[in-house]
Amino acid sequence: MKRITGCLVLAALTLNTAAWAADYPTKPITLVVPYTAGGPTDQMARSLAQGLPSN
Image (cartoon, rainbow, N blue to C red; front, side):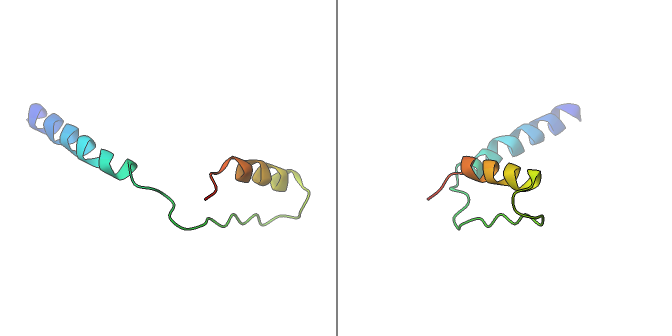
């Protein structure tokens, strides 16, 4: 029983790798920061946004 379960898990993980090859995201991402501009949360969000890929 354990061998069958292991084989099924391995098959599921192998078949799931095709999803990683998809180009994601296909549309622009809007990053919403619900805090005031210039604060530490805003600065972190701006740094994060610079690291995101742009089309």
